[in-house]
Amino acid sequence: MTSEKFRRTLSGRVTSNKANKTVTVLVERKIRHALYGKYITRSKKYCAHDDDNQFGIGDSVLIEECRPISRTKSWRVIKLLRNRSDKLE
Image 1 (cartoon, one colour):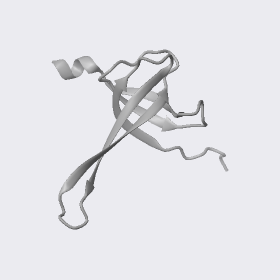
Image 2 (cartoon, rainbow, N blue to C red):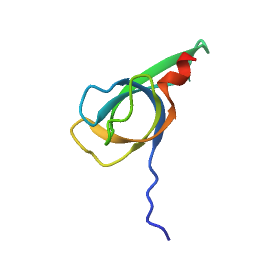
Image 3 (tube, rainbow, N blue to C red):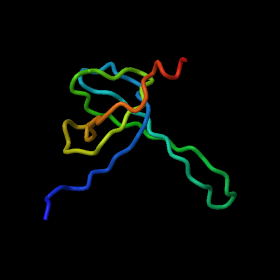
Image 4 (cartoon, rainbow, N blue to C red):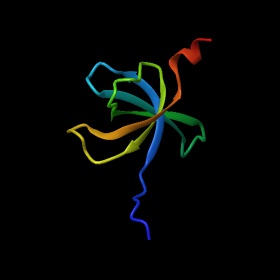
């Protein structure tokens, strides 16, 4: 048997990279209203560890849950999904 743990992954957009080795990722999800049936966008910001300071504002990234790195950081950036310059073209 493998001792590999299942880790949660989320995808979102980088909104801030001002802190050293940290990016703030905005994760949006759509939920259905219980009574009216309309889809509503809910969002939450996660602080994620960026070891090389390589991600910029507007990048779409995939983050994974990890052990707590600091008081607010329990997520790590795995990979870049779409670069911010791809959106401009």
